[in-house]
Structures are given as C-alpha cells and as structure tokens.
Amino acid sequence: MKGWFEGFATASARFAGRPAMLMVALLMCIVGVAAFFSDNEHFLGGVSLAISMVTLVLIPILQATQNRDNAALHAKIDELIKTHEGARDSLIGVEKQSNDEIEKVRLAEERSA
Image 1 (cartoon, rainbow, N blue to C red):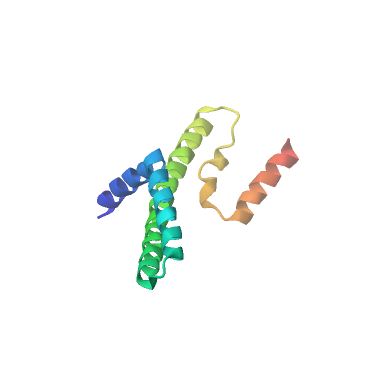
Image 2: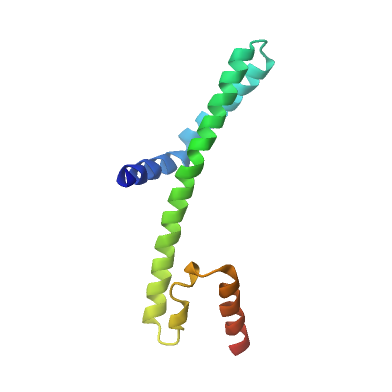
C-alpha cells in the first residue's frame, strides 16, 4: 500500500503542478459560479461537494510529496556536513530535534561566530 501511495502521490503532485490542473480548477470555478446562480440546490450541493473532495484529496498528496522532498534535501545537506572539515557534525540530523533544541544550536553558533 505504501508503494502504491507514493507512486500515486508523485503522479498526482506532478499533475497538480501543470497547466492542465489550472484548467481543471478554472473549469470547476466556472461550474461553481454557474451552480451558485442556478436555482437548482442539488446542482450547487454537488459542485460544492466535488470541490471539497478534490481539495481534501490534494492535501495529503502534496504533503507527502513535500515530506519526501524535504527528507531528500536533509540527506544532501547531511552529506555536505560530513564532507566539510570545518562543519560541526552535531548538525547532522538536527531536523529531528525539537524547535527549542534547534534554537539552542543556532544560538550557540551565533555566539561562537
């Protein structure tokens, strides 16, 4: 299931960043405005539900993609820290610490500079 979700999330995020998704969003907006001005409450409710469902589906897809990109970026930065002689090895994995601990590390760096 995890592999399926990662593939689905990646493909969906790529589609969400393309002009075709902008066209789909604009079309949904136009249909939403048409539904608002129509006297058919079922049509308005259906369009509102569809827009809400698309929004709810895109949130975890985009978040999963962002999490993967963030993890890759941290891995690359950790590798640079390992190879640079003057870098502090204590910074490797600092993203896993709490905000207070990260702030302490940052303040310690400012004081030593």
